[in-house]
Length: 480
Image (spheres, helix red, strand yellow):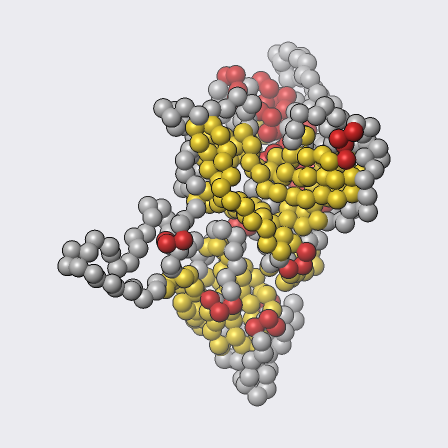
């Protein structure tokens, strides 16, 4: 059934009254599908209004799709009834997502799960916690859109991680475009802790679900979470964060088993949590896919629990992928070459690319140590690869540029300037260089070096010595 968000010819009038038409379609009860037309309404209906900003659009967009975090959404007046149309009543506002089940992404063993919580828009770009670019007007790139944490909206649903009956804290999730680990933003989670007179309130364990997943029992997975404490807590409050997993349903037929965990301090205040885990069926005869939630386990210690308190975190990146034993991790991925092909009629205009940057990925394998003890030695010279995709896969590539000095020397790679990412134009291993990409002027005859640096599907950024570059003559950059 077709439903138009603008309300053209649709019951209810569209907009924030769209749910009235969707209630009649009733996809859950009648098993009908909905073809949603004009979903850009959240931007197009407001973009020309004075004071309209990206933040206001995101708030508008979030209300429409997943609902408000607390405030009541005003419902527009009913349009006049059409001839023969009978009046009907509807309850209060319902977001679009309420009409459909919240499905988990594919099993990370088949397709590694990776998210930087990006909605496909941003104001800046970050690489490993460093701001590489600041956009004057904001950017959009659907290629960088990832899951934004299905269980965080319209607001997180924290609960105590034990059997205490204290009042449950409230929490708010919001996009943070001022700080990120990789990509354009992070998710800020703010938790308000109520006061408590109970004796054990000085130590409170909190669980905050973030992302649903489904896993295959007995298979071993690895998960990593990059987070940052946004505002240092007060002197009377301290907390520690761990990456955890819990069943999404109370009655489950499996046990979550954490094999190992790790914590790594990263640059610029970020921390990386790692967990190796699997699920084990309680009934050996039943081995079905298990539904779990990845989330935050926060251990809170308060010297004065009788006073309310606040804590806030930034979530930068979440990855879940199959565990590969160390004996299978012999390959060393790198970018084997990069090249810039010239374009015909290289006129220096903003509408003509200077050239097409291309590259390719490869792996190097170690030399085999062959120890043949007998003529019938059963051990192979090389380890066989596991029965899953072992060749490295990359989400996108960061592109950098650096001009040579007058004496034809090049400075340290850390001085290279970020100029864009692959993927926005649909190219897999390609990036068109435009005059506006270069944030510096290049004197005639001066070389420019272009670097290609990959970000893999485990959330890792290649070290510079694993990247490739190409030196190019006769490039003239223009001030952006």
